[in-house]
Image (tube, rainbow, N blue to C red):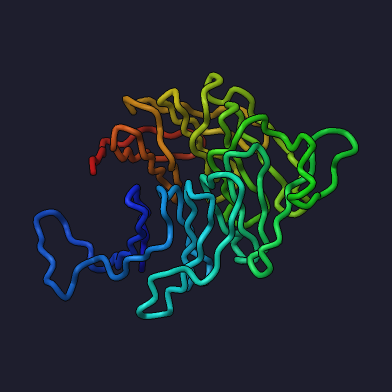
Length: 274
């Protein structure tokens, strides 16, 4: 029923989707779509995630924090819990159970937080004998990426995590053991990979890069299935999928809809500007 937005003005807006009207329709004062404005960051907000129970909204920011807002408190405008990191936080994603929160920061290591205790762990190293989970304080080993992360996303069943990075790679991690199970190198010709997400059936990952391309990859083989063109600037901080379609946000303030069909996909005729 609700969606949320985060802005460069450091505020969050919670929107009732039932109240969203077309540009030709007007809302009454009582039916404005924004039902809550939240404040607690002091720099640009990079990503948002609803807890699976729908009662908590999490946000992350360049101010190096992750904030949790209780949506059941009618007049609540400030977070009730928070996590501080030593790096700007670019993306967050809840495990479907809500027990864990994955975070992508300007550091090359993926962070996994326990949602109850906020204890932070880094997945196992992909090198040799370092294949053991380590606490965030023991991060002096190679954990896969060589540069900061731009996005992290759980699969819909929680069995895998996908990360994308400034280093141009996409890595897929086992959601239980935390081991890196597949690497897609040079996913966008060596340019930073801004966005990544799984298809509903977890057979594919969709990526968006600074090369202005969107690509569909097979999880099992790591092979590219399809490449989409149409964005005139880099694909920005978000790609997402439904059962039959993908939504791409581009840096030239375009939203491009792609229609997925079987193992291939074709751009739809719909393009929208904010």
